[in-house]
Image (tube, rainbow over all chains, first blue to last red; front, side, top):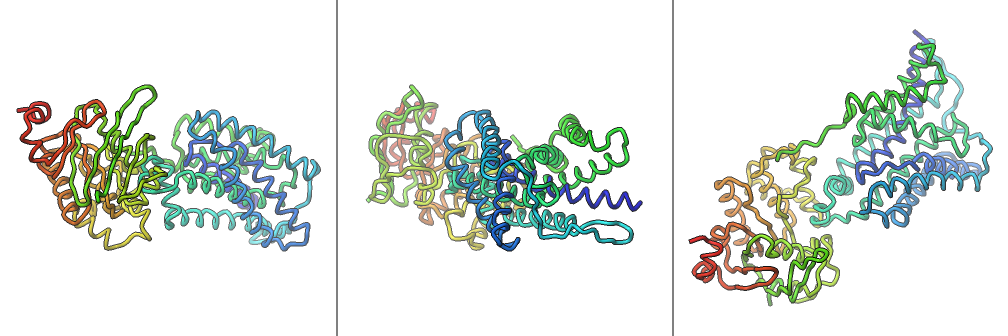
Length: 293
Length: 233
């Protein structure tokens, strides 16, 4: 029973990271239909930026805040300079471009910081604390809390602010959105900026437990895809819930189904993608658009 | 000084020319109908004004030529365009659709919302519903209500009666007349010429991308060729 609870807590912690990255993927997908394959490498780059700031003596939270701002600006710039010229062309072109960006960002981080793994001490202690026989670290709880705070903030942004309304309008119907005066290109850039910042959250939260190195987020990206598909590709809430569910599921399956163990963890995530696409393509929270003729 | 002037607008979709030099002017406070057969260039004329199609020629708003004619810029200048097929934001709520109408305004005014709901009480009942679940008539009301939220100087409507029950059409046109009385200038493209000529003060007839007739709506109603071609008696 203790082991069971423990697996759930640590599953939620890794799920929080999957969910944050899945949220980034969903935000870009629902506004442009593009799957950004570079999202993981962008997150790694952000984590390196944060590490560098901390390494230069910044306090963690100051470095984290600066990283979020820089990542947002980077996402906006990336969309404006690299993605926008292809917007309106075939979707496949942009998707292939993001695969190119994956390779480019990976090369960039290796070139700047080298391939060796770095220790990234996060803000939360990794020392285990004991609650009723269940041992978990502050790191686990911290990651879960941060991902929940993030999804609430993103939710409030989308539903309670004018910018959020514009973002949703641009995603649902860009032509109409322009007619009411929404600057759609600016909204798409903001969407990419937001996604880059969310990716940064995932990257920085993942770094302390994964070791910081250029390929750190590559498997996380696949889990994030599984989380996004599970939650429904267009549902921000679904992405985070999908991430948490997936994290717990993988942990439990890995612990209790012996022939799966740790080795088939990734394969299990892919099986989740396949199963969802076969039996419930809109995911747990996605709803097929309702429209009366 | 007219509110809107078009000078020698030409538009093409690829090889096909849709407008061959359209010039017209619309006075402040006017209610103008644009008539014509399918493919005459009515929709393209509206699109040219709202900046959703590229044209050569000049669009002059309140005496000054508009250089950057993008939909966003035209919306900011007080032009509201309700396209054919009542483009609403299908997955957003009725209330969010109306809030988007006020995008160019500073915040969503509760008074403006109340005003729209007074025009269309049914939108109030359905305010939390997804716009895509509304009936055709309700969606047209929503599209119109959204345009009202922008407090436009100039309202462009494309086929507002298309596919709607006569009683709903009546309701829509009543609302248009009331908006016009309160000072909104309206340009409406309509297949239903009888309806359009009854509501409008002035009308233009387009044929293959050119204006072939224009004048007070009453004169056009009496015009022999308009009667035969568009009114059907």
